[in-house]
Every structure is written in structure tokens, then in C-alpha cells.
Image (tube, rainbow over all chains, first blue to last red; front, top):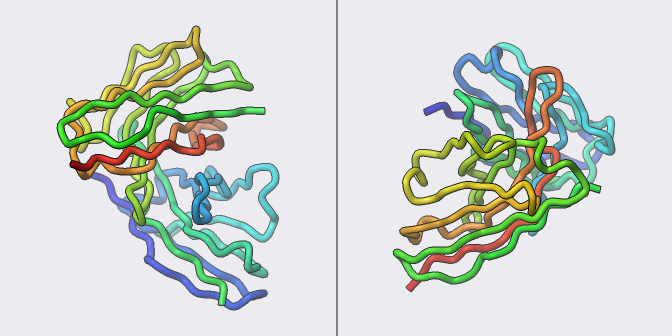
Length: 106
Length: 121
């Protein structure tokens, strides 16, 4: 079955840039979505179709997908960005989530 | 405003059954494919199942195939997940999600708040 691999944790200092990676076979041929999940809350879509931000998501969030790795980048990171982040793709009609990355804002 | 509200979770013994519901409002329910996603305590998101807009086509994760059944009642604007032969590893928060598609890509812009299923003796 298809798998997406994320680092378990990423740390960043406030005001700096955080990058969260997501890798998988032939990922360049897929569109990736990203979800933010704060403790006790439902997931929130923060990026879709690799690079598109939903309405209401700050411009500090950006996405890319090239060279077999999708990346969610958060610039000028704030304390409120501390959360778990999941990448998501499709494989033969089924949904696949990455294992998630805990972003810590130190 | 799009709203999804799950219900039906609770404590059940191994081998038991439970039916989850997801009541939808704020959009034309019958036009959208719907999904169930679960999250075990302290773990990541795991896709469970999806149903197409008229309920005629379903797909399941291998781990739940033959035990969990997704369905929908478009007249009642409600999504269901019938859970049979439950195992301790089915313990999780269960979320329903609405699939939205744009320019050839589909994603989950709307999620419910989740309902907790605990399988334990």
C-alpha cells in the first residue's frame, strides 16, 4: 500500500521559518494536501493542490511539491502554529495520510 | 455555514457493534462524497472509508474491510458507519469529512468534531 513519510517532529524558534517534509513514491505525480491539528481539535485544511491556501489561512503558509518531496513551509512562525501537521494524498481512490509531524515553536 | 456533527460513539466490548452518524447541514449533502477518518489516542489520522454522492459506491481501508460499513441517507442528510466485530484496535476518535474537489484535486475542507469509540472489556 502507498505510504507517505513525515519527520515525527520539527522545532523552530518564533519568527523563523519552519519546513515540514512529506515523501513518497512518485509524489511528483500526485497533488498533496496539508492539515493542521491542534490538541483536542479537528483537522484544519491549510494547503491543497500542493500550493493553494484555503481562504482564511495566513499567507505565512506555503507549499511545494518537487523532486519526490512535498513541503509545507511556515514563515515567521508564531506560537499559534504549534500543532501536528499531516500531509495527504490519493492512491487508487483511497486516501493516504502521512504519519504526522509535531511542530514545536520554542 | 457547513456543519458536520458526529454522534453514536461510546464504550463497547470487543466483538460488539456500534453505529456512528454524521449529520450534515449548510450544503447540498447529496452532491458530495463523504468519508470517515479515525485517530487512535495519541496517534495520527487514518482513513477508514468513503461513499460516493448517491451511496452506490464505497471503498474501505483493508484494516476495516468486512467489519465496517459506510452508508448514507440523503433525505436525512446523514452519513453512517456501521461498526461490527469491533476490536480493541478500533478504539479511536472517528471524524466524518466532506470531500471537496477543485481543478482535478480533492481534499477535506470540512470536518466534524469527532465521536469517540472505545472498545474495551
